[in-house]
Image 1: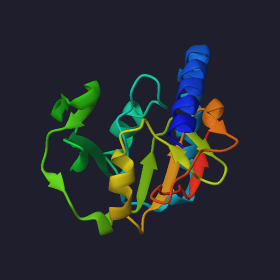
Image 2: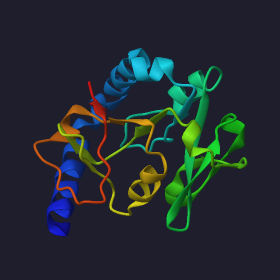
Image 3: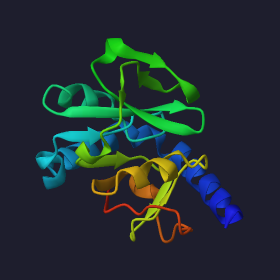
Image 4: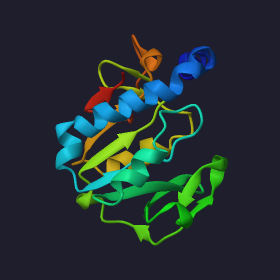
Length: 177
């Protein structure tokens, strides 16, 4: 299982380098589809992620919607993800893995989260997700069982099958281009 996951991560990394020139346009289209989604429209509290260079870009989206919705971002603390409220770009600091993370108070009212937007290396049509291999979301998502979970990714990141283990949390839906 580990080898299959490792191989799939390598394959997707290669595809990312081939598709990097269209990433900005594709990100805009994916984010527009997310904005139009009924689960997003209805949500008040949303857990998002502050994207890395090779992920669907969420930076502008976070700034735009933080005026109307409560946006939470994960912060890496040891082997865990803590959630913090996004209050603006001025309150971000470079954290683990060179990701900009909010510096505010910890958010623990997991039941208040309506929607979770999750990054991934790859997804399949059954909602299985392959992460980067550290298990952060595998440990976080079980704490948020009632929230609708949407994986967002570039089209080439949707594969035939993601090797899934019993502890893996499936996405309710995948949004791509």
